[in-house]
Image 1: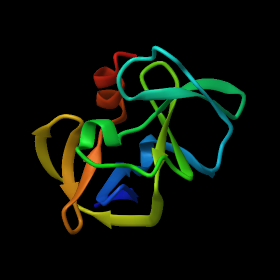
Image 2: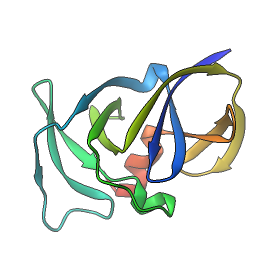
Image 3: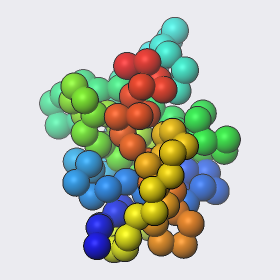
Image 4: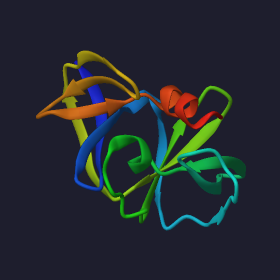
Length: 125
């Protein structure tokens, strides 16, 4: 059995593997980053480390509300921050693998599981 952190971006129910999540914060301070790659809306300070702030709604065919939550997760070179509209909690279950980037599988009741490193790749960071 795997554990997931469940949340929503827009109307999309999503999840991340709990081992990839560094934490959640509400209304974190961030700066807009002009001319950033698609999906990157700015940079944020996550516990003293500067990291890219990503709006996953760009890749998920949904309109995100742009927060108020930020989920920090482990990327390949350090933390990345993802805008999240609402946090549902921790779920336990099996993952059914899918091959549809940026997703690695489906858990629970159709909740798509994101891969943080794939999100980085899509953003070009």
